[in-house]
Amino acid sequence: MTEGAALSETAVAPDVPTAAAIRLRGATLSFGERTLWRDLDLTVAPGEFIAVLGPNGSGKTSLLRVLLGSLGLSSGEAQVAGRQAGLGNPGIGYVPQQKTIDAGVQLRGVDLVGLGVDGHRWGLGWLTRRERARKVAEAVAAVGAQAYAHAPLESMSGGEQQRLRVAQALVGDPSVLLCDEPLLSLDLANQRLVAELVDKRRREHDTAVLFVTHEINPILPLVDRVLYLVDGEFRIGTPAEVMTSATLSELYRTEVEVLRVRDRLVVVGTGDDMDALGGTA
Image 1 (cartoon, rainbow, N blue to C red):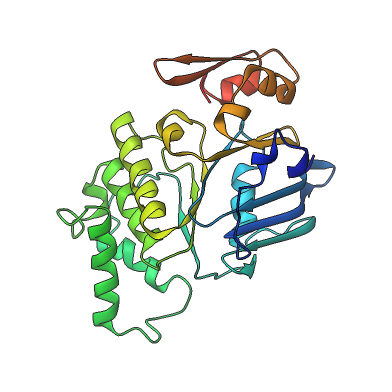
Image 2: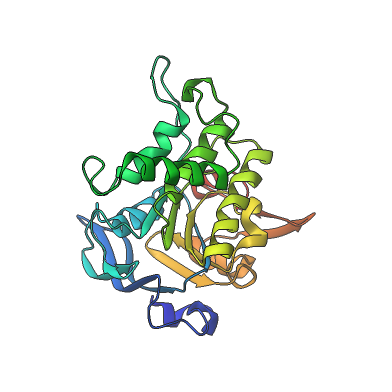
């Protein structure tokens, strides 16, 4: 199924500039006989916020790996931040999942953020230490983490650590932000905080966002479109178009009901796929 066969003309972002932030054409990713997705066409405009949803194993993280250049397509093409997808693209910022910091790891918050400065080159390169420190300080300030940025990571809460991972992704002034389950293991307050930081960046700097998540509710007010992946199939459209009982039932090939409860979406269905969604989308 191609983007043109998605739910409506909103599957292609309206008035997309020639220099799209992300462009996938005929993108297919297979491992042996298993195809994660086939003939995926997607154009993401600068400043657009796309949520990538679907059960475990549907190829959400693999899509980010393709754009990061660490995984090649089986067929088709991928362009991101003005280049063919490949390693070391300085136009990309990457926010990973929340991870546990091992006790005894001598890494401060500013050290973590600083890795984002050096991530596309060895050493300091053309950057002086003063320039590097300035970039790190600006990124830390952009996420409001000045009060604890010089503390060891192991002493911080999960929300504080994840805020600094957002700073690390922003320190290179990216035009595209790829977020891989950045809300995982965070409480509701910190989920909202991280989502709002990402949204603030895209609104103030016209940064395109591809946001992989199992939980759409914390980002529902922020999302322009949804890419939903299931069993090699996909749908692209606005949340109102994709997050419906009819659309998800078609994708999952079983009866699925989408309920709106106090401005939250609740997905009710059967089978392991629904369990992977945690009962919500």
